Image 1 (cartoon, rainbow over the protein chains, first blue to last red):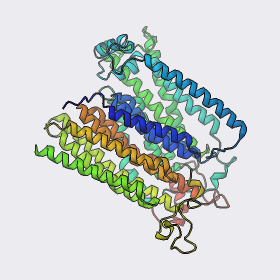
Image 2 (cartoon, each protein chain N blue to C red):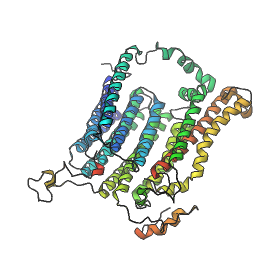
Image 3 (cartoon, each protein chain N blue to C red):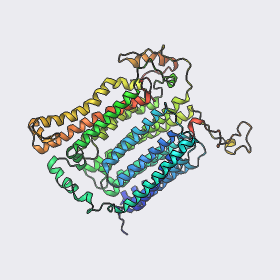
Image 4 (cartoon, helix red, strand yellow):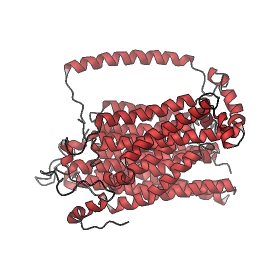
Length: 343
Length: 132
Length: 126
């Protein structure tokens, strides 16, 4: 009996079925919190799907963000907003029906378009014939980076990655501009709730044993991104999650004493600045923007190794920014902006 | 050969505990007993599965496989810490939130129960903040 | 002995169990029940990723994802628990700002300590 392990259709069918169930449930539920939690289940399933498709880097990102950050941010926000969908408003019902019609039309068009898509893992498809062969064949010899995804992300398409880092930075900035307020003047209603000083011994013990490993693992993911799945974004998310865990197991004040707001903001901006600064340094030395080969003279290595080192430096920049942005988003959203008391 | 049989035994017993967990999560009547099923069964069966994986990887011994097995051991260790901690935290929250617990009279929907226990599990049983 | 069919059967069986657990996520009467279901699905995901890696013969590629899940998976559950602990306590009528002075120094934890010791005599363990 032969088993075609590259395409387990049972696996695909089951995961797709569960994803559809999750999506429909998340739409049908009335409580926003339940929807957020069902979306967490969806995140696990999509991570499995990507693992099954061998898109390991994407699966890693989904694992880090979906397991640690997104639902926590939803929960932190849910303290301050209305958590229920109000029904029976005729005007909104009309809008919803129009939206439904538009969504159905779009779905039909997209389903129609799927017939033109190439077969899964088709080597003759356009995506696999133009640029991918060059990346796969040349990336190691041009950048000395075995993980092609890292090479493409931080070298060949580093403009993309730089502006992604800028977008993440802008997200933290916007949340801060909208929510951040001084602690004494405008007190929201929920801040009359009792202060919690990390009274749970079990949680504190778990945090003490897990957080150091988490931080070391985050650094490993960041610096090992050349050789295995991972990189700046995943490492940064895991490092930020360690501070979020500290805030959950102790309290927000405790974690903010370890990582102060000024430091968070400096890290937010500093990572992007490091990224752009490396690009500008390359430009100043007569190469293209973010052409890491320019660093060869400074570092005293060959062009190829200079590109590898440039990728590493850029990943560190991304990691610092993402880490600080995650901590900043959690601090602002979970405390309602006054950084007094988090979840 | 013996290693293979050990792998199969470990994974099958892990699957057994997964099945037990699933049955518990679906069939148990209230929140506390469900958490109990999930917390115990899942931790043990994950340990068994990953132990089987460690045995399978260590069949052909090499440095790289040793590293992978070490990471798997680390995973087992931290799941062993993290999963019961999560269970503890969530059951603590449920207790402080006064999630109602199941009693025989509340489960039978008032056929034999006292007057004050007659409210059943359907309506008004859970606090409003938890529903939805 | 070729164990690959066995692993594939295991993967599909665990997926079926995940489908069953999804019932609790979909139908669970309370939010914490849904949370519990998601937690269980997450643990099964951890196992599944390792099994897929073994079937592929490249476990070392997938192991980091599993480690990330093992370390991060309980943060969401913890946050949900904290959320319900927070909203379950009724708000005191007076804000306790006068008791706990906001201090700018790095010893906020120590400044908080007397107020904390008043309600629970537990000491801060370093």
